[in-house]
Length: 224
Image (cartoon, rainbow, N blue to C red; front, top):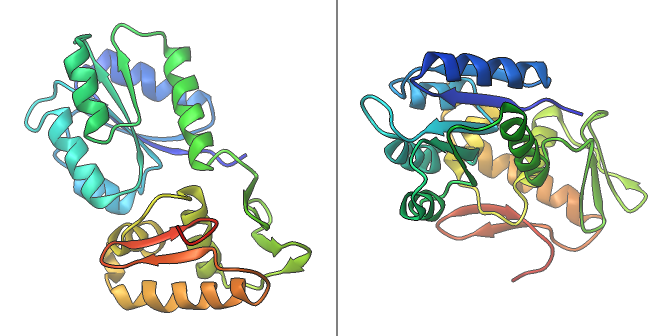
């Protein structure tokens, strides 16, 4: 199983240290911050799979940071808060968080929730299946039925990223960040590699990689 990259933003030092230690012990790569002042840089350089956000933070609060994450990344988001009001939970979920954990919480439960989110995203799977296509993350191979699909390392990384977020539209910016990083900010990289991956996949079956005009790309079964 591949470990996840988890960005933890929590201003309470004891909680932050405990969460980071628990996630590290579970095999994940963790970056922890006391505030969100470096969020954009961390999204570009660390490229987290999941962001754990405390709601009440110095500077920008968790809701403002959630908006920033959603504008730049397809990472999953788990929000932490001492406020257990329904309105706050609904606000977070409607703004795009994937889960909401109320303090005080058991560390083992938080780790389990993050693992469950990573599984839903395809990050804890050795094999990801979309229709007749199977991606083996460990070996870096792709098949449609019994036919192997020859991909470059970059094409495989692109396809694996789309598969981990299958049925969701991801933008060119999100793909650039995940596959190349902002230092190579050229949308043409995405277009060229998406076209190459699509062509190779369609040599052996119906279309799976779709362009959503004006938004980005999605990997899904069918043309809906």
